[in-house]
Length: 347
Image (cartoon, rainbow, N blue to C red; front, side, top):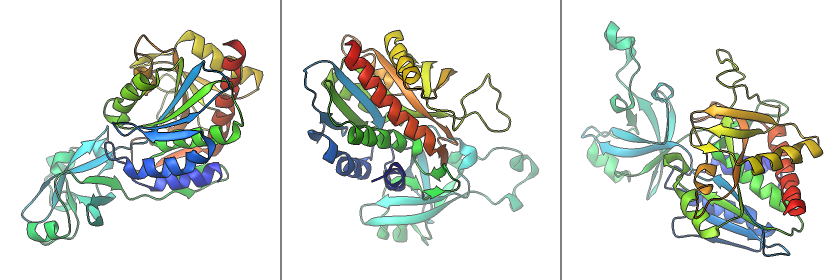
């Protein structure tokens, strides 16, 4: 299947952080034809292995399977759901969103609501409505009906958004953070016919709430090199200065120099840049973002792992819908393969 087909399929399934099962099952199905073995570890990470001709080096690629979302916190006597946020979500983008409540007996459609602005006082209208003053309306008349519909505290809630192509190379969809990283791993392994290195492609869990899956997976894999495949903020929209983000869609993958939780190992950063330059691949350098990636935890595993990050410039991350340029994904695949070649040549 093509990059776009895999991105569409992975984007459309639900995997709110801590509840990644549906994504893991699909990723395993898509990646298994191109690896020697694939298994689920104790925490829920998917670890796929393509064996090399030599025992060393071991390269770990990580892309997180989870997405930001919500979780049922309380059910009112009137049948409305209040929720907790799973991952970093701006309250301002929540109102009037269509969501899906994933219950044990099936999915329910809901709408996020609040006190209508028409009857708010002036001082209320001038304030951002916080998530704890919102509710999800599933059309239940009362608590008894809501429970009969299958809702219970702890049910995950995802945004109801479907993948779409809106331009020649531009696509939109849910959970590009980080299903696009999963797609890159699949495509790399498909194109990589043989390798001297041992390649570990890991779909991690619970990245959005503290890089938890990468922490345990890296300990188990014990790699010689680690590379996180993720997304980054595309700053090419009105109101964003280059100082805040100089990364642009369509200009190639972004290579992290530093972020809030990680400093790229100079050896790995040099490998990435050399691979890009030798193969005339576009890339952008990025530093100073307040977030971080799975590389932050991989780099600290055991005695330390030289690590780096390749990110896809993506607009509107941590919102119900993201936007990216497929050309950046294609160039990231080429860069990963070129980097594997660099490692094989030098190590």
